[in-house]
Structures are given as C-alpha cells and as structure tokens.
Amino acid sequence: MNYIIVTRSRSDELYEMASSFWPADVPRRRLVGYNHYKDALSYLQDIQNEPYDYVVNIDEDCFVYDWAGFEGLLAQMPGHILAGMPDSLDYCSHRNNSEFVFNPFFNVFYPSRIKSVLLASERFHSYAVTGFQVPGCNFHEPFNCFFDALKYEPAIKLKTATLKDQITTDLGFALHTWYSREFEGEHRERILSVYEQANYLRSLQRQG
Image 1 (cartoon, rainbow, N blue to C red):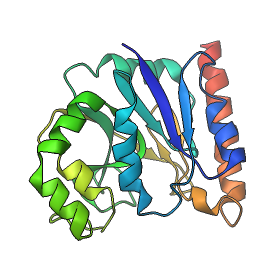
Image 2 (cartoon, rainbow, N blue to C red):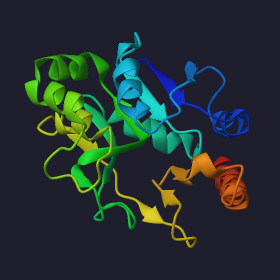
Image 3 (cartoon, rainbow, N blue to C red):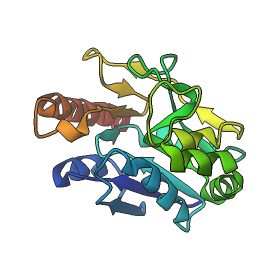
C-alpha cells in the first residue's frame, strides 16, 4: 500500500506546523492557489489524479499526533472508497450539514475508484454546474456534490470528540482546529495552543 499526503495550503507557518508531525519519508504535496472556499471542489477532484493507491488529504490546521493510530486507519482502508468525519451533528458538535458528506479537513481517498464513480455520476456533474445545492445537505458547501456522488460506496466514518474550546475536533489521532483562514487574526493564539497540545500528546505516544 502506498500513499501521499496532500494539503490545500495558504500559510507557510501553518503548513510547517502540520507537516512537522509527518515522518520524513512519507511523500507529500503542498497545493497552493485554491484559496476561495468554492475551490474545495476542484481541489478534491484534482488530487484524485495522484499516482498512489491512496491519497491522504490533511488540512494545514490538522495535527496528527498519533501516527500509529493513523496507520491503523490506513490498514482498514482495503474495501473502502474513503474515510473521514461525516459533516453532521452526530459526528461534530458544530457541523449540521449531512451524514453523507465527509468534511474535507482529513480524508483518506481511494482515487482510482473515486474517479470512476464521479465519471459515471450524472447527478454529480449536474450539481457541480448548478451551484452545489444538493438535496439533503443543510450547508451549500462546494464539496457536497463530490461526496453525494460517493454516498453509496463503502466508507469509514470516524467518530470524534470536541475539546474544551468547543471548536477543536479530536479524531483520536489528530486535532483539527478549524478557522485556519483566521490564523493571522482572532484564532491565532487558540490554534497555536492546540498545536502545543498536539505536540504534548505526540510526546506521550512516543513514551508509550
């Protein structure tokens, strides 16, 4: 099984922070220029062209503190088309979108199968052209139509917890801070604090 980590990046500082948690020998690709929120769809489509068995999408404000836990997830991927956190209240306390949509802050994708499904989905192409307003989704996110096309495929749904700040999401092996676009503003100190917490959790794993 081979894989690559890809990241939609806006901040040199945040990318350096996130990538500091990844082993040096893991292939990675930093993609810039997808800065508008509507670029999320083209980003998700573009990364399916990576020539690897699996593509791991990790936001630059998502810190993987337990690499063994992450590799345990990878070991479960055969037979599944994707893994991630469903974008709904059952999985995240502040996301009321749809259980069929996986929020793209952290995902593992099986690109060869995904490309085939998207190519064959008239529904996907219809909603991608008409503005992403997919029935059953409470948010008009540009990535809704991408995940809607995959909703009948086998997927791993990750349970999460919310930290005391009532924002940060814990996947059990990674912390996602949210609000990376405001890293230079009101969320900077909180994100830096979560980064330090992730470093501490990683040190505990290493002692383990």
